[in-house]
Figure: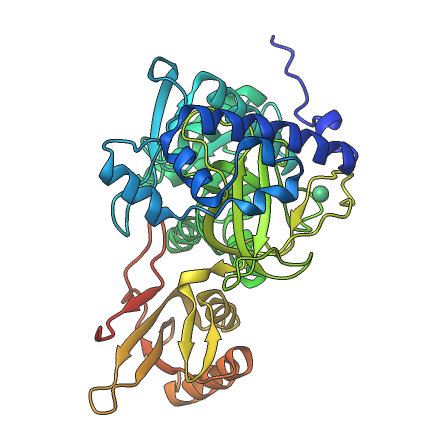
Length: 442
Ligand SMILES: [Zn+2]
């Protein structure tokens, strides 16, 4: 019997913040130097900004380096195929390649070396442990395997903790339910939309959560879990305690995760430097202010990113969590995508706010779509929230006016509301697409 260690690393996770910042600075200097020395891409960027690695003497000095966007990484790969000039680690050290989903264009590829895989496995084991996964758990991994980074890394981590792992991925819905029952899975990993989808299927089949052994859900890969009403729906539908996690292909999986306090997602700050920048000025936000999340790899050897502009919105709290960990947290998880912001009649809002309202109506299904169109006559935008009513015998006028009132309270503007029958909207088996933009492009 292997004696599995505990994956709570007190030395690192409760490190005094001053010491943690010292460690980050040491690692940042190492990363900046090797990027400058080994990559034409970074050398060009640094020269343009008028700095050399020697100018990085504090964590604040990194502000002189302009953030890099996904579009710039895509362009770099197009100009210098196949991977651009920022792979940095020599080719004989490459072990795995993982692209971003590429749904909005050319996918951005990341490479993992042996050390990268080791680091990612160890921090993912740490974050899964943080959310309550323990040796002996039966982990049904509903994250997609193959090219998507989360499937394999969570698989490696679950195995390392000492769990029996079911590498099913985000497919085979019937088999998922069958394994829940027959293999007595205790932990389920999935996107929140897939978890909701499975909860709906269980209900359809008349399977009670009392007949399942599930106790824990680790949900990530897209927005959803941070919305209390969505989380509650998943928890009730699958009979689990649900934890939010965040990762992204370009940086790595599970770089932030909730502890048992659920007081925000803790960052793995010994591997990733977290900054929150104002969307317009690109200056650092004050603690507690919402801005764009910008991340820097502190330990990654291949395809390291310095100041990656994620386009995701978050805020940061650096006080010690009640769990004892000193690593910074983002309360409320990821608060939206900077480019998902909808501007309607002079007000800004995000799909997550619409979701919050939709979840407040038990007569609606979990699916919804925000439709953006152009008014042919005036050229103005029309925003319509399309929802499914589970019982079409209900008076739809009453429901529409109640929804409009709730939406106005949340968004400060009133979108149109359209009600369709149950099962009309496309079901999500992987990641939900909530915005349907049919506006005429000028
Ligand atoms: Zn905590």
